[in-house]
Length: 401
Image 1 (cartoon, one colour):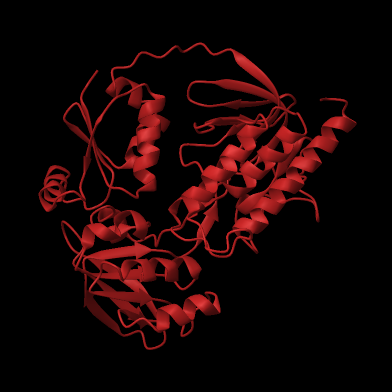
Image 2 (tube, rainbow, N blue to C red):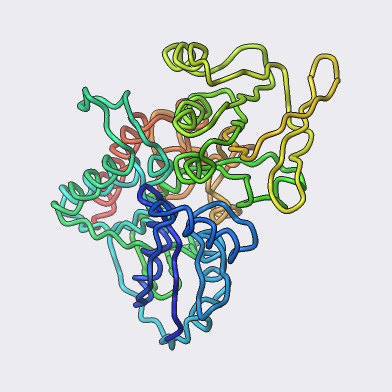
C-alpha cells in the first residue's frame, strides 16, 4: 500500500470525514497536526502549493488535496486505483424495509423512530455525515441543552440513540438511486440495497459566490468553514461574506484569531437573529461592509484581498486581507433525485401539505432537503419524526413490515 500522510488539526470536521473515508477503505496513515508547531504548518503550505486549509492529503507522495478532492476521486471511481486497492465488482443486493438517505437531525430522527417501530432501518449517512451541524461550533437554540452543545457532539448523540434501538448507520454516499419502481434500488460505491420505503434526508450544502477567483483560490485563503481553517490564518485580517446566523457565527469565531474581520453584506441591515446581531455589532474586531458584494477575490497564488462593490453607488474599493470565508446560504442536496421525485424551482423536494409524502408512493422526505422556510435543526428533527411515522403507517397499509 502507498504511504498516506494527512495534515490536520484538532477540531476539523473535514479532517474527520477524510479519515473516515480512508478507514472505510482499510487504510492506515501518518497524521501531522499543523497546530503543534509553526514549522509543520509551513511544511504543509509548501508541500501543497500554498494551501492553508486542512486536511491536506498525500498518497504515495502525490498531493491529493483536501476532503473534497479525496471524495471527488472516490466519486469518479479513481481512489481505489490510487490506493492500489482491489475491489470486488460484483454486488449482491440486500433488502431492507426502510432505507434512509442522509443523516443530520432529520435523518437520525427518522432512523430513531423507525428503529423503535422495529423496522430495522438502514441509514446511509454519507461521507459528510451529520450534515451542516458538523461544521457548527456552538448550538444554543436546541431544546434540552441549556449550556449549549457543539454540532458534532449533538450529532454523535443522535447517532448513538438511533443505533441503540437497532438502526444501522453506513458512512458511505448513495451514488445511485432508482425510484422508478418498487422495491426501490440504492447503491453506494461498494454496496447495493433494495427497499420497500425510502426516506430522503439529504439536507443542504453551502452556496458559493460563483466567481472565477473564488474557484482559483479555493483552499488558498478561500474557505466555507471558519471553524476548520480560521486558526491557520492567525494574526491576519479576514473577511466573512453573508448576513445570516451562520455568517455571524463564523465572524465571531474568527475574532479569536484575526486582527480584524470584515463582514461583507449586500444589504444595510443583517438578517440574523437579534442576539447574534448584538454580539457581532458590539465586537470591536468586526467591521461591517454594508451594501457590498464581492467583485473579485484578489491574489495570484493565495488571497491578498477583496475588491468590493457598493450596490447603491456602484463604486469599488479594495481591502487587504488573507482569508475569505463564504457563508451566503445553502442549496438542497437533491440533484441525485432530479427527474424521479418532484422538486420545486429551487431544487427542494415537494411534499404534500402537513405530511412528508412526496409524489411517489413509498418515498418520503424530511429536513433541509424539503424545507426552504425554517431550515433549523429542531424543525429538521420534527420532519424526520413525521417521515418515520408516515413511513410506518404506509408500510402497514401495504401490509409490509
